[in-house]
Image (cartoon, rainbow, N blue to C red):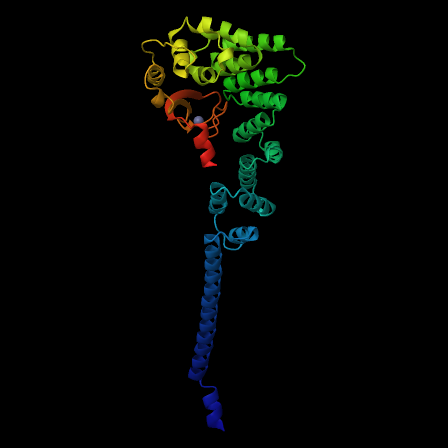
Length: 353
Ligand SMILES: [Zn+2]
């Protein structure tokens, strides 16, 4: 019996048992950690795989942010990839879901800015205005929000609010001279209480001090006062409105004025309104068309004059004139470039349908 007790209390045995317990406990903890990590990895991998095929739910982004501590910038980058693919609704719902969980003021501001911009791009202008106004409540010096707000008011034709926004941008020392001129011009043109004479008078007073409004002024006069347009033609840079001149109907052309100027003569000779053009102008395409009018009729019938609009700021080319560049949002930055194109006749157009 004594021997058993001695064995039982053998310190060596106790040490062995003690180490055995430590070993088993460590092994179990280690195995459990490996199991947990493996589980997390496979869950994360599964999430990423789902992202790869665009199947992540809005809540998954919150999960990635809160559970897996994926950096906020990375989450924003993932969400903005949908914007680039044109899937605005998806990125909007991700931003909205994240907004409910993000507490940090800077991150909230970034989310609101992305949300407002995406609403703008997808054409939800009123919602975009609401988001930017909310953002400006706690960050009134956010110039990006003010710029987008101005774009929204412009598109919504809310000229007074657009002018208020310009004033806020001015207070932040932001140069908005061109925007102000453009909005003022639009406000006058769209004012239903002004008579046409009064409108014309105010538009010309702006044009006299801001020649970059040439196109707006010429366009307005071509619709409402063609006589004045031709009376004023030499005040406009003819090359800047060549496309407008090209599309004027024969009956609306003042040929007495046209014949006094080489470039105007060449435009209407190239168009076929005049028999004879002049020798050469600075626009080669016009000279070629004008020459063809007196030569090969078959070839002349196959070519026409087309136009591209190039933004002076970002250098992007656009097929239509727009007062604001859709790419860089610069104002009155388009210049017109003429080019020879293949004429599409009516039969060809019909056969394409
Ligand atoms: Zn541009």
